[in-house]
Length: 252
Image 1 (tube, rainbow, N blue to C red):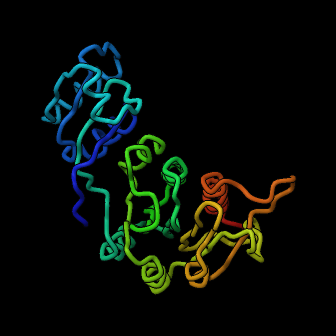
Image 2: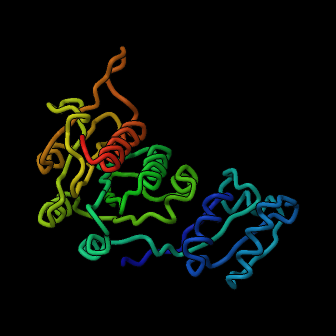
Image 3: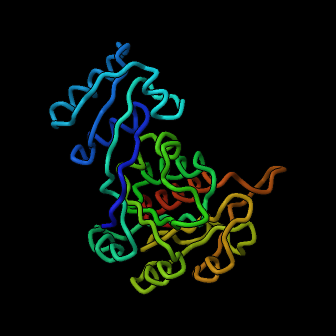
């Protein structure tokens, strides 16, 4: 597992998720001295029970600490233990029961889009998400807030070379299905039941050429209206839950 520097969690959802999933990773909790929120009071109880240091500070101190982002009177510092590297992929696959479902995000730039993708991945039961370290949004406080807790619980594999990890997944028997408006197969006609990695492209540009060349299939989402594409976070949700539907019914 890769070593990550201490990071900031902002708001009730991310803090609650971290305390529930991995309380040992939370290194400190700040609560606004003016706060009377019962949900924050419950977080404080949970943190103290886990021996997390809790401090009360004026609300404007929290404003400064999180650069004026909306914090709901609670922020926390933590060292994430769900961030992995390329070398961890075999162990992550070995731990999966049944056919793996992996999400690969090829260079998403907007932190709100990335957070929404992670939220959908968590809801769909994705085993882990692969993300490039460079030329993409990192796991920032904005991403964590948009993910509503998913960024603290999902396995996140941050890699310097996405193509190499795609080859690694293929060698492990994972089928790579990329999404592209130039895909010559419909998402709804593709069999998504087996070991699968869904590969989503970045906003605007879509999949990079090298990434697309590693995919076993390129699929498109049929569009019936006047628009010709979906936002990447919406497209990710559509593709993931089509895979979930097929796995639940056992057929495409």
